[in-house]
Amino acid sequence: MHTMTIIAAFEPLQMLAGTAGGLIVGAVVFWLAQNIMGKNRMQAAEQKSKSIVHDAEMQAENITKTVQLEAKAEAIKRREGFEKETTSIRNELRNSERHLSKREDTVDRKWDMLTSKERTIEKLEKKVSDKERDLDNKDKQLTNTLSEQRATLLRIASITPEEAKEILLARLEGEVSHEASALIEKIISKAKEEADSRSREITLNAIQRYAAEHTCDSTVSTVDIPSDEMKGRVIGREGRNIRAFEKASGVDVIIDDTPGVVVVSAFDPIRREVARISLDKLIKDGRIHPARIEEIVEESSKEIDKELIEIGKRVTLEANVNGINNRLLPYLGRLNYRTSYGQNVLRHSVEVAFLAQAMAEELKLDGALARRCGLLHDIGKAMDHEVEGGHPAIGADLVKKFGESPIVLNAIAGHHGDIAAISPYTTLVAAADAMSASRPGARRETLERYVKRLENLEAIAVEFQGVKQAYAIQAGREIRVIVDPKAVNDENAWRIAHDIAKKVEEELTYPGEVKVTLLREVRCIEYAR
Image 1 (cartoon, helix red, strand yellow):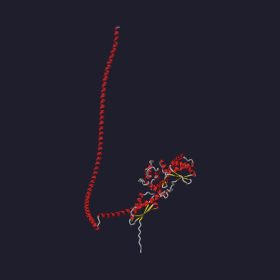
Image 2 (cartoon, rainbow, N blue to C red):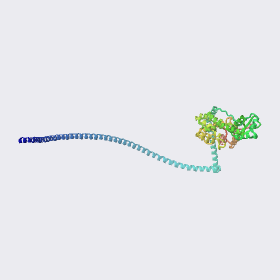
Image 3 (cartoon, rainbow, N blue to C red):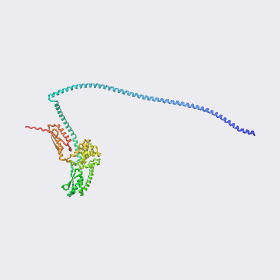
């Protein structure tokens, strides 16, 4: 029992011992296997490392060979580039050398030429120096000879040097006067040949193209009265109506024994027109008293102001002048009531505009600009008499405020020659102004003014030496001058006629032109007995 128990107790121990032995044997086997496997791995790793090293060495060798090949190729490439650059530089140096060689040859040739010229100049200088010495010697000889001859002449003629100078100067003066007269005659003849036909053609063409009426306007304003009883009503009780009318309108009313007529007189034509219209309205209305008179005069004044603007518009349309400032239109309208020596200034301005246009177009200038200058040239006459200065300057100052061009301003200010002309339009307007004013019947002239102009013409002519008589004929359009044939020769006659014409231009004011005709007549009378 006990033996069975012991044996039973030892059975687990045997099993444990067997298990431990198995574990030990397994561990030994595992260690051996690990050891063997480690050696195999070591051998494999060693072989692999050798293979890697061999591959690395082969790769390094290949890289080295590649780098060496690339380096050799780069070296060859650079060498070729260097050789090309060297070749180019050599070529440039050769070209430069050839150019320098040519320049040296040119410089050598120029040097030879300069040397040759210097030798020639030296020879010429020597010749000039010799000639100067000869001239000095001849000059001295000539001076001595002249002195001897002068002394001989003075001794023979028995005159002093001062007398000889006077004789020489008188001779020179005669020769110069003769040459000057001949030159004046030649210049005048040539100018007449070239300009006479052309100017006559242009002016006649302009006049024929614009044939305007040029009758003188009447400055008398009259109002028809239906009966003498109406005259009394116009005068009013103790003259109060006529005094109120004259005070309101600024005119003089003349009521005389003339049947059916009342005369309105005033210096200002616009005021006279306002008075005429007012008086006509009062007579037709029949209510004539101071309050009604003032009302009618004021109403008529407003009507005239509107009428001036309408007249200005109509005349700009008639003259085909565009762009006139509206504030200038009343001044143009005022010209319709202004007269110059009896000629209506507005009609005169329109005529000047068209004449200037016709001449401008013949000369290939701007006809529209010439027309504008002509229409506005006398606008200064529309200003009241309180403004100081002549109408050209007044008109130029007026239109300058309304933006007119410098050419128009110069034409207005210079059409009477007050200032210098800066354009041909000023001269054209002056010519057209003279043409319009000088037409027969265009203007009236007082007898005193007419006689005074004739006297001045004759007085200017007789002032010249050698003139015996002078006569103004053809209403002052021509002056006949008779000279002494012994004191004035043919050449001096032309000079005297020219000088008389210039002096008339400078000292007198006249329309159109004045013809100077100089007569030199030699009568040879002999008797046969």
